[in-house]
Amino acid sequence: MKSSVIIFPGSNCDRDMDVALKKFGFKNKMVWHNDNVIPKSDLVVLPGGFSYGDYLRCGSIAAKSNIINSVIEFANKGGLVIGICNGFQILIETGLVTGALLRNKYLKFICKNIFVKANKTHNKYFNKIKKDILELHIAHNDGNYFCSQDDLKSMQDNDQIAVRYCDSNGEISENSNPNGSIQNIAGVF
Amino acid sequence: MKIKVIVTPKNGVLDPQGKAIQQTLNSMNFIDVSEVRQGKYFEIETDLKDEKDAKKNVEDMCKKLLANLVIEDYKIL
Image (spheres, rainbow over the protein chains, first blue to last red):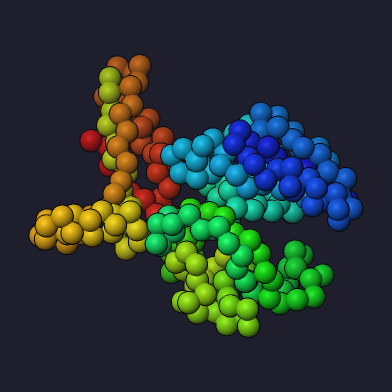
């Protein structure tokens, strides 16, 4: 399997992704944001960090960079793209995934381990993961997921909510929501 | 020519920064303040000479970059 990690000015989790992907057997290539073409890949990863200093809105400037048209084209042809942290913010700004990310509800940068419940039905990303509840690390200032009620309904109907914040027992509640995200949403397809 | 744009959070979208500012103003004895919404202000210098053309261009910029229409409204002044 081949993967590509896109590096933007201000990305800081790109090399972590390189290590992680290689650990799981991917032949990974690092791709500069100013390039126009993605090497032949089974997976494209937009890593975390602070692309373009988070100017204007997190991910908004990176979403207009040279390489992004190729990422959009790759995704529209059915290619797998994953955006983590700032990468998720960039995907949101490209319009490839629905919604927006607001400042955290209590205005604090959150850096801690949390639990999420994975939606494992009908998707290519989680179907080989044995656990339903995953312990992950978050580090963000703007992770408060928001979308319109119509979009929310459409995503629920189409099984597009990927992971939701929960406690260690898998209970999804206001108490297990670190940043105010609508419906405890931590990730979407 | 200079075109000015204001971008604000849409009604109904949570604005934690505005809320924090409101609470601080209240604690400073500005007790009349019941809500604050924080936005962004842009001054765009353009080489276009016709104001109508320039504003049309800026509207395009708002839709494509300056505002995220899921959560923000824009106003060209």
